[in-house]
Length: 551
Ligand code: N01
Image (tube, rainbow, N blue to C red):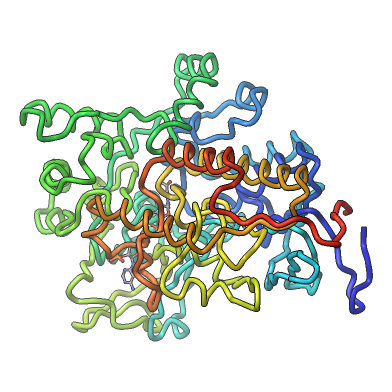
């Protein structure tokens, strides 16, 4: 249905979903299934979100593929074959496209469409969203599937505009790729993206300079082709596997050691750590139940990894520079890569420690440090991260009741009820928003939990004749405090220099954003809230506004 409103053809739907990554696609599927009309607006030229834009060499997930996938269709999970234990970006993108086609979702998705404004029309009880092309959409519900690591952060660096070579950000990688063969390449950053990319770029570049400010811990991913017996076992027991993941601490099937590091002998601790190293990737963070709450236990794991770095990297000075110090393992997101530390044994790779002698500027021909050292480069790669968790939302900056802007509402840090909704922004839902497990979990599990909850909520409102839902200020304050209190029990509270706290973005309030109380506990909580008639929310009966249902 279309109608003329101030000479602009407004397109009406029950719901507008912003973003067609894993969250938006899941929402498209569930909304369709529930008979709720929706249009999914996606800024990119294809679906996939994170997995569309992060095409840098080596990009892959560090949650096992069989776990990092939708559970909403048994046919889908039975028929899809993952070729590797940890899927690469191209394979995940193929999967998302497959889901879109298999369930005929493409007709609800509008690509190359960036939402630039969203405002709540109180009289009409609807969200009005405007796109970069000037299209206007109106919907009772706005579902923000805008992603948690979708706004790239290029640090402001003097002279970048003068650089004569090419420069790129890992999160906005050209689809045609970047040819680094025979070139002098610089990578700034040593987080998850960099540690995946560095070994592959090193194989092709004439020389690679890695500019490291903070050494982080990188586990070997221990990736390999999917073992047929593992796939068979998963496919036989998928419902159990999914149930386990949904009730678990982190939304996946990785096994946790339920003992404290302090209850174990040094020999048993070492054996556990060796086992975790062999299992690879994030398994290290499940080595002891108190690895993220007890500084001494954390240090046992950290020292173990430092020992591994020293054993792998031949040059002593480089090895020491790669050893993280004054950083609890896991409090900056643990990295997972293949041959990361080994790469520093190559003759064509140089680690440049910019901790104490930072980068001063980019020159026409490369990078210059404050001590005057300079590095000639043809290609400069920013692996410098994202305005995480809030960036995509504050960029749109929705206007809620009485013109309240989200930037104002979040000026001291994000405040949400359950990481799903905000006071002052009725009928707006955020998928994996701040205050929910989100980046602290298998994102697909958290996405599915949120989408299930949101779609059930909309159905409930329709059924009971409600037109508005909005958290009470009290519920929002209480939840936000709870999120902070939970983080306060962990080592995250003592290690604030990370994107988990927003510390990587100048001027951003330093507040721990995800919920660390566990995916299973969180799911219980949101289920209970819904079962109790959406406690903590104010629901209002429908006014004269007609229910939207057109296209
Ligand atoms: O970004 P990051 P990322 N001068 O913010 C450095 C997910 N992910 O894209 O720590 C010099 O982690 C910065 O240094 P410092 C995952 O959740 C997952 O790598 O601020 N250096 C840091 O080293 C991950 O955590 C996967 O001192 C500068 C780096 O840039 C998240 O995405 C793969 C600098 C940024 O690291 C983000 O990861 C990839 C400056 N001015 C990503 N500014 C997997 O699933 C920044 N840095 C495996």
